[in-house]
Image (cartoon, rainbow, N blue to C red; front, side, top):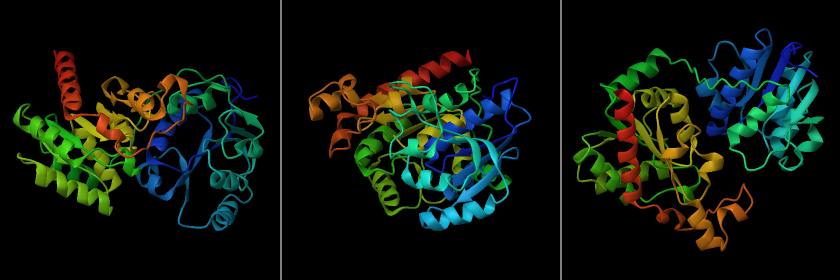
Amino acid sequence: MYNDTHPPASVCILRLSAIGDTCHVLPVIRTLQGAWPNTRFTWVIGRLEAKLFGHLPDIEFIVVDKREGTLKARAKLKEQLRGRRFDVLMHMQLSLRASILSTAIPAKIRLGFDRSRAREMQWLFTNLSIAPAARQHVMDSLFGFAEKFDVYDRLLRWDIPLSDDAVAYANRVIPEPGNTVIISPCSSHQLRNWRPEYYAEVADYAVASLGLRVVLCGGPSEIERRTGEQIVSLMKQQCLNTIGQDTLLQFFATLERATLLVTPDSGPAHMGTAAGIPVIGLYAATNSARSGPYLSRQWCVDKYDLAAKRLLGKAAAEIPWTTKIERPGVMDLITPDDVIKKMHSLLLSLARHKK
């Protein structure tokens, strides 16, 4: 077995998506690189996710396009890796598609999740598993891959280099850093989204009572554009709506200049953590203890336990750890006052740390 005194020469990380999960992977790689400085790391990653991470200089990236069929993508991956064999494959994705792709990656050790967590028959595609653990945050579970090789000293580092274009864009959106709230209102799962009128109320309060600028951010999808337009139309104060106008790297650069981020359970929540800003996460359909912004779980508005009791008749502690309560109206358990109070507490904490 490899360890800090007998490191592998090569490691392949298989984690294709999504944005939030790939944000969790980078500190694991940085931790392993710190322990194994001479090991070569290759990351098999999704096309969208590569736009954020694919220019890191000390990791080799192999990009898989999810728009391609699984068998076509597998054949392409196999050809790209022809003649190569890794010492270790860290299979970090619990999907059958990813497992099928993993068969194109030659490796001596094929490390996956323990049997209790290895959904979609992942155990059939691995020959070694991480240690069992219950009720972990997603990032903690990924650190189990490092801990399997006795690497325990974590390096929580998200050193994503920014292009000149991304920096210039962020400077235009936030000319003076330190006085801006970014609202990224949409998750990829519609039932995790909060009401536009609630966002508008919070945004109005941030501008009128706290003296903050508000910037709306998001992708180009129809629901995101429509949500942004609704928030703007419902607000009494002014805000800047940039939804659909930036690239992933431009958005990340903008996050780095913001004071805080308000968002539901979404990729941007974890991008905010990677950018080094506090995140007020809105959680009712999902559990912030499992999937909340890793360094901002204390700032989340979490009504997951209440949702479990009302909609499932059980406390959160009594239901399976991965349960999602994606029911119509579940996010209405979070009120604008809940978010405003959390914002006050967060800003007070930031002010204290500046002294």
